[in-house]
Length: 123
Image (tube, rainbow, N blue to C red; front, side, top):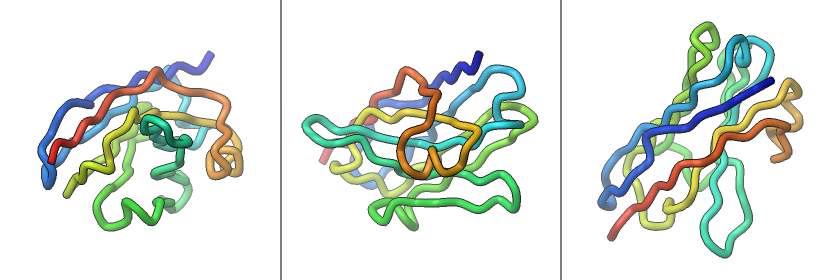
């Protein structure tokens, strides 16, 4: 059974940085692609970043390009989201998710989700 646990959320001032971590159950990231999603109050959930292990290809939403970086270690079943130059509009619950099908991560419908971690950016 795939399990994902996020950590690292919190409150930060605009312009600051946070690093989110996602710890997965054994061998998850050997067979599954990870993604970070977020959902702000009253808004739809959106894919923020995703990591295609082979070759290290990444996807970023336009709103976070140049500010956020997804990385990970598949052998250690860890994925990170480094968030720099945070803005108040980045405030949301951030979720780590994964699926064995890259297409499902990219389409926003991965099969496995963490419980989420709150990120609040104050102005």
